[in-house]
Image 1: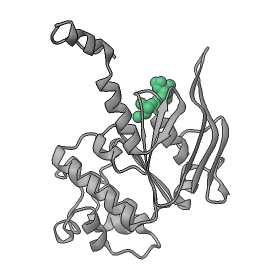
Image 2 (image 1 turned 90 degrees about the horizontal axis):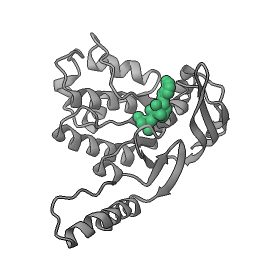
Image 3 (image 1 turned 30 degrees about the vertical axis):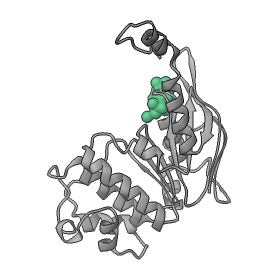
Length: 250
Ligand SMILES: Nc1ncnc2c1ncn2[C@@H]1O[C@H](COP(=O)(O)OP(=O)(O)O)[C@@H](O)[C@H]1O
Ligand SMILES: [Mg+2]
């Protein structure tokens, strides 16, 4: 379980200070999928980076199981089982897929063939292939997730995994998250705006203006969004008034 308790992140410029995260408190349990969503600039990526230790926090605590990791650096957090998939995946150029998976697994005993199968790739086509620019965005994402499975992480954070992949790969990606959820005990945190990903969530966490807006089930979250659309007074009034094509303005 990962706990963020009253976490503050403040960035200081020459003359000004920006409060990016304000008193964020979240409890993320094992074997659950959390989808963090909300407006751009709300602080989602900053939460991911503060969990991984990429940016320091200015107040509050972060606890992994019974360990206070607030003062631990990225490497220490990685050793404790926290992983962060970057928005743009690294290409691990020159390594073969199997070498990369072995590197990721470290001391863990893992079956590379099974792991590739779990991310929807056929092992015999990939194990000996060198990772280079001939891999598609979707393939790279799945290879990256395979390396996360090999690490047997306690907490895996994915920042907008849908970015830069085609629809077909996106479909396979959602299946991969489902499988990861069924088979592994990892706490999965996905930052996303996609309805298909929201539907995977045990809990949807809305982050707005550096604060936790709301935590709901995906059913409730999606119902509220639909409700907002159907209740748009502006559009309804326009339709009643006979004006076509008016936009809602929200
Ligand atoms: N390195 C930085 N320097 C200054 N401001 C930053 C920096 N990183 C993020 N911010 C600001 O922090 C806020 C939250 O950013 P971010 O966490 O990336 O939001 P999100 O991922 O929800 O779109 C934004 O207003 C952004 O401009
Ligand atoms: Mg972001």
